[in-house]
View 1 (spheres, rainbow, N blue to C red):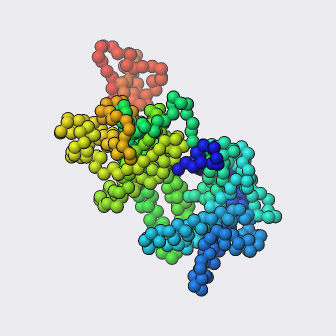
View 2: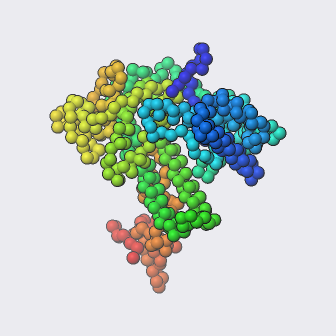
View 3: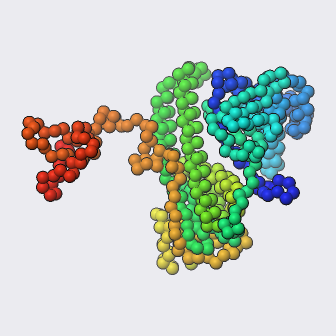
Length: 490
């Protein structure tokens, strides 16, 4: 949520971008050394609290107490890790400990305090301890050690004066930097400023990640997520095939894995990471489309139906898998972040019954099987996701201040999320996959018209997709009789 920075300053929001690193072998070793040292700090705190727990003493959970213990350890205890980086690990531990304590106090007895060791821990440096110049990043080190200079694989997407922290981390086989910036909320001209009285309802779904409908003019937006769903199907099929292929090479229980097995596991982790990056990028594209549509329509309030109540219901094996792949929490978080940056308010309301309520007369109807909703009371017909979004808009807290238009009376804009996904094509097949066995051996291809036989030759020319006909020659224009067509003999 946006907050104010000082007296008289406008509201600001925090945004984070992940940037890869271009490292030499020595720089890579130093980065891993810093992450291992941060893991040692985490393990040291866990060990200290384990001793205190066995003695019956109070745990060391406050940030000030842990900082005093860190300063008492002296310089050089944790390798090249400086005090500011070590304190970020202590702050992470304090946040986890107090969050667990608050949840246990609220009645969640299954929540546990942090007790698991980690080999590599992310390290965060705050403003004033690092330097970013173009694509060069300077990270501090412990006393007596040279600073670490690394090269970013792209420029920081935020202005230099807005960067507040950088975080070094290792995620799924890749070293990266998370750059967090403090950005002001977007300002608009007076004639293009979003109006808080203009309300639009948003219905979240699997086939359509976002379906939005405005109350003032009846216009709507449908963002298709079929390419995203195809990506999930392709990834699941790849995972099953990979597991079947590697089952015979897996080490026995208690047996140490070989180099070949470690390489296999690394390829699996890289595939999982690529899938997560693709799905996250598709969600960002879909949310950007929704926020851009709202800004163009000068919509200042988005009423979003919260579908998280369906997660606890058992709907069968296949539908449960779809719900797990839906990523509702991440979708809502991305929507709230982008809406806050654009100066648009977001309200979460209960969406129960919106898919079985007519938006025109408000009466209950049977939920349709397809995409078209039809009301037998008022003869309304329209897209069911758009109709649900229109009903959600009428549930805005405080009531809708605008006069509701006729549902689906405006223009319905269709957009597609995931333009980078391989399942977006007409064949819905990943181009990185090897073709089927029959196609790999060679195919004559699609049937196409062949040139007429040339007089004076003993044998007819070779026709088909492997024909030596020049590219600029059109066999369709060379026909002896009207309507005559030459086909490839198969």
